[in-house]
Length: 361
Image (cartoon, rainbow, N blue to C red; front, side):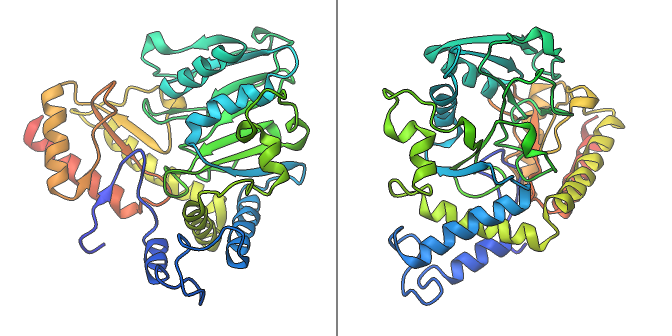
């Protein structure tokens, strides 16, 4: 690692060293173009190849069926919170949301501005420590879609399985879990994700949407916010976030070379199991999320003493283990162990946790 730290940030998060080194080598001259990707026209042949390969490799990694569009857009998942109801609240104007964390709540609040959004279940009163189980009959049968947040970055929980919506279109925010575990894309009408956790730099969002759901937006919807605009123009209606797409594409190539999503899932399960097993056997640390709903990507834990938590974060930083502070809304600690976090980073964290417990328990 050299002078690099182990960055446990929830996002923007660490990127694969191999990708960063290769991008640095090509910063002044990308494959003989005589310029950086950041400088070249998005209409040029080199960039057309970059974006086409990125889409093809993402489809390969996730097994995206042919009847789905893959869109690269700007604005982060926060913009997509609004794009979802603007494009999909096209029938009854109703949508049902399951609230499992702050980002799920923000997505719901955005939809509530634009139509009849209903929070059908929430774990907020229990500090989002579990994923509510909702039976198909609890959803409004005429809802245009059901929205869930697959992995909850702040609170460290995730869906253990795809919920049964009784045939209603399922939409999910996978910002902090995409490419970390195998998923069946065909079970979702729309999957979206901000890039800055498990894909690439901030500034890019990826939307995977069933083609039959594209083209439903009202004429009053702003052009950029209409899925059809991006689907019809190969994600290049306007200048796309070119550098972000390039880095994402390089990450996709690396994941394929490492065995794809299935291989990453096994590594991620092993990393998470190591950390959770240590926490569960500890006398100092506790993980507040119920075991069956624990995230593979964002592992939240506390000592029960705010001052001790702050001491932990400070001393960990001195050892090159950075960004371990929990989200400002809940405190404690959070280790985000996305695909780019090597297993030795988790091992080093556990070693530090053992020493800290021996000195402070």
